[in-house]
Length: 153
Image 1 (cartoon, rainbow, N blue to C red):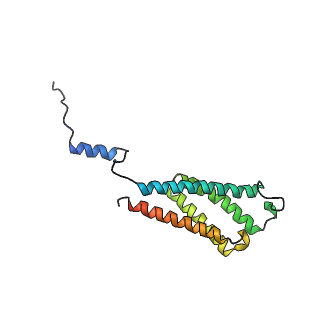
Image 2: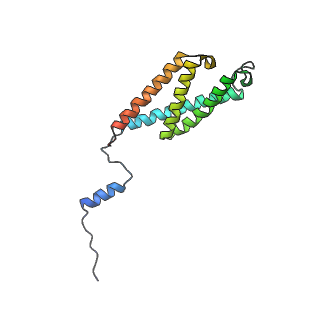
Image 3: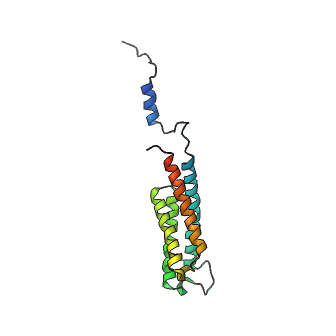
């Protein structure tokens, strides 16, 4: 009977272990990716608050009796329900940092800007809201671009 003798680990073994290891090498620093994920989480919290606010408008938890949902114009009701749903869906996707979450959030941001600019009778046409939405969109695109640059192709 022959005994099995331990052999010295080779470079090939190290590569194999590194390929199946779930940990990243210590030298990789994904600073921009971490910043992007942090930004997405902050936007998720903002989207949750916006979505809950819109649902509070629908259910009557905010506003007076004269501001009740059923007394508002149909365009306002439609936009409010749309944002009540899309903001909460976007919040889930943003918190998970999924690509679909960013797409839904971008859809919500662009929709709000379009409604403010092209249909001012619905929410009042606030240029400040449009500027904030544009600033958030620019911040997202910048962070996504920087995060993509630090990952190898």
